[in-house]
Length: 165
Image (cartoon, rainbow, N blue to C red; front, side, top):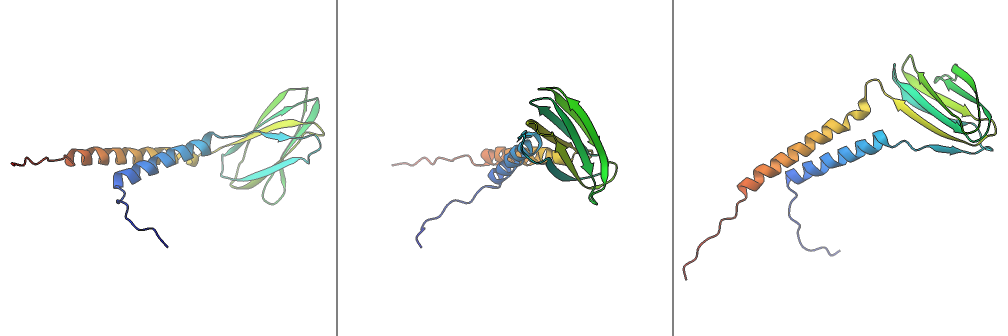
């Protein structure tokens, strides 16, 4: 197994900068990337769920292609129905609903568009905003790495020797 040679050690400042940028970009993707779901008219009702804490909420947005009766059902982890709402929608109309949970646990939701194609977007708003934690951590690591790099660049001055020939 070849692979002779050595690589220089990675500086701590470079590791901190890389970690900080990774946390910032990862937090951006985690927090801001909500992709809508295309739901066909022949599809079963769309179901999904999430672990929620007290005070968290589901933000549900549904846009139907033709006139439809929309049904949104929220169930707790025992399968008991917490909320069930029917809404009549016209063609190309968008319905927005915010469902806040009272207690912590796993909650599932079911969105039924009743034989109509729809675009569904679900976002979860966290009360404690734990999903924002990567941003200050990433900024902290990035600033520490830049600070360490600026200090080490002052110490790494090249000293040229004058040689008499």
